[in-house]
Length: 370
Image (cartoon, rainbow, N blue to C red; front, side):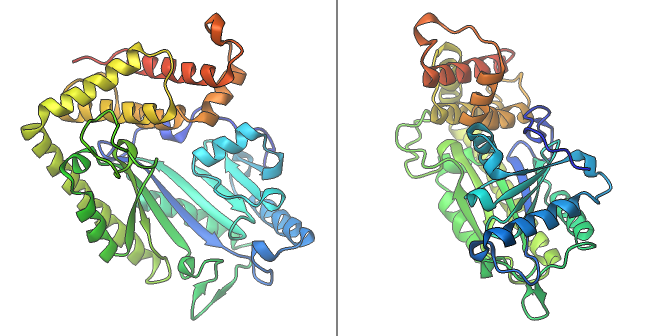
């Protein structure tokens, strides 16, 4: 049987090594499915939503490795647990008491119940893993279909709440670090190129603004140069076509970013060194670091490593920091660890969070060498 227990943040998938991690942070594949003969989640009454949750939870109990999964109603998550689920890309705009969650213990597989669709099965892979992530969600889908009848038609494929997600119901999102393309001002051309292929390039953490550590004048670009490649629709073509299409789009972006890094190293090494060294110095000398500052610092250190300014830290460790410095994760660590803070901030929770964020960065960067 599945275990019903608290969310565990240890041994997280995002701390593992993966492919193409010089640029690719992570890959997420999601399958949207709805049960036949039930309305979409926004039209469900309490009895119907409970029935669907019961059907889905029960179906997971028949998986070969059912004991590796936990099931919970989202309304039973505390505020910190809810934050962590959002920060990991597992929950988005949940519908409160109607929404359920099934999570594998290692965090690599999740399934939301009664969110936008009755089911959203997701797989998370560190680095580039489009096929691996897609295969994982289809394996779960195939097992669930032995016990659940999903809504589908010959004309439209699998039926989903959003018409754009119908057809295969598959959506693959790839998170990228593109500091060189940001510096050279080629993000707009990437956006135009992949838009014609059916994808959007979106900022991960909001605008970088004009006061970012890089000093590159990248107002309007994504904070830290972090972006996600997102399909506009899953309604056209088979899942094989869609996987091949995003593989091609991502590979083209990787080529462009690597070429841009060569140009940056040849023509802008002083600027990049300044950004990288300022980032490292700020992390090492600060008592308090905000989330936006942390994202910018991690990007600067990563860019410096990629260009050869310094070494002593792995790509996977830098990518993991993007999750470790988030508010919910730090609140969990703060509440479950023993820390001795400076006297003047012992009763100031926001400051303790910023202090803890600074300490985590300092510990992660202690072996970096020029």
